[in-house]
Length: 113
Image 1 (tube, helix red, strand yellow):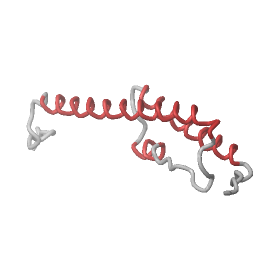
Image 2 (cartoon, rainbow, N blue to C red):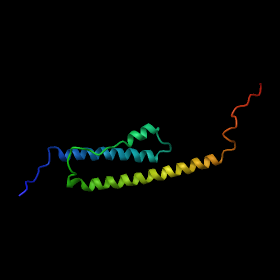
Image 3 (cartoon, rainbow, N blue to C red):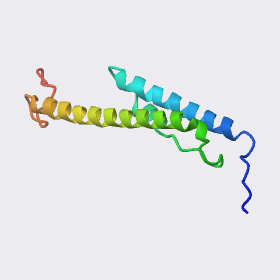
Image 4 (tube, helix red, strand yellow):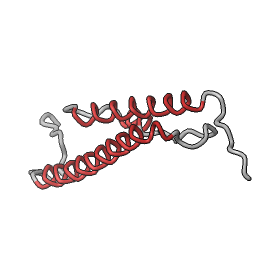
């Protein structure tokens, strides 16, 4: 007969804390996607630097629904990020196509010289 291994102390609390942090990171990413202008690249990179928790054991069954909801939100944010990147590329290409001068054209003219 195999003994049932007991969960370490604070097991549920550690997972609740990890999911809370992920929830806050997702909310920040959702706010960034809703903003008219994105923050600096370094800020976005820090926001995307989430790493799964280690050493806290498997996800408690009581938190499975919450974890699935967070996963669904993550997937939705990833989809919106991909769409925003594609749209930014299209805008960049359109802006480049509207250039009236070549890159070799001087910007300033010395009228006195």
